[in-house]
Image (cartoon, rainbow, N blue to C red):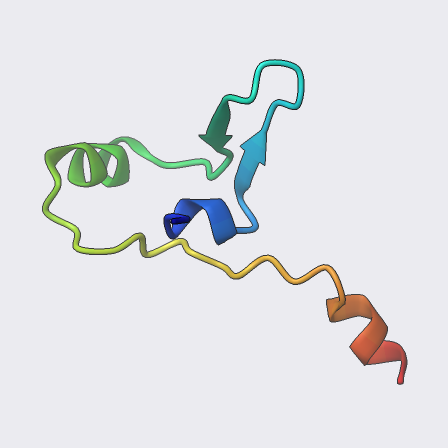
Length: 58
């Protein structure tokens, strides 16, 4: 089962070792809020859509 992060446009996976990390630039307050677990879901989640540019051309 995939997590919300696996579907996010900001989630980057290193193909050599299979590790992934979030590429969102957080300020100190946002990072503390996310690490404390007070947020139920990621406020920066953006669905990765590889066909987004194609729909604009149609």
